[in-house]
Image (tube, rainbow, N blue to C red):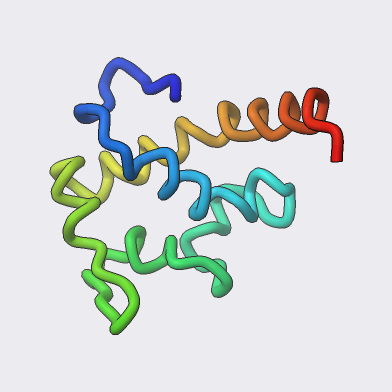
Length: 96
């Protein structure tokens, strides 16, 4: 995964989290600016300032890796084009 220079230390979880959170954006279902309110993803729990925790979501681990919610939001936003390019390349080289 190509991370920006300001990214936190590499963690195995980041590609999977980005993939899950950005799927609706990568598929052009919604624009990134709508992702924080999109009901079909866990991203709002990470994006909201309310520190939302549910039986299924604990955003603390991931947010602590970045230090602040704003840094995590910027990191995810910076990955949109990269993930879309990966999806495009995958469609070119993988034959179903």
